[in-house]
Length: 100
Image (cartoon, rainbow, N blue to C red; front, side):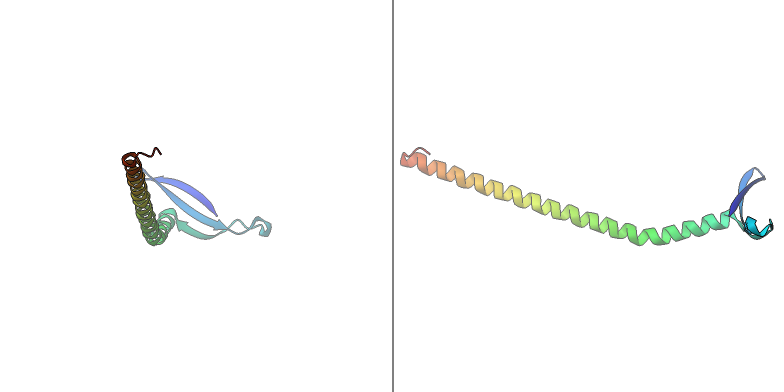
């Protein structure tokens, strides 16, 4: 496959052509395809493939963020509970006259 560029009406266009192998000693072109057709086909294919994948990735990221937020809130709540428990123990020991 080779690519040939040409300029027509101040626009660059590509022409992709496939040649028979050199060992056959023929330089005839067996197929020609305008580059714009190939570009459009590749663009359509990428868009088709990327949309579901992008949605899946976005949902996975959102689920991961929600899981992290939940874990962080749980850790913070446990830390608050532990601090309150230790403060209550310190208060009791202070009132009972036992140093901790």
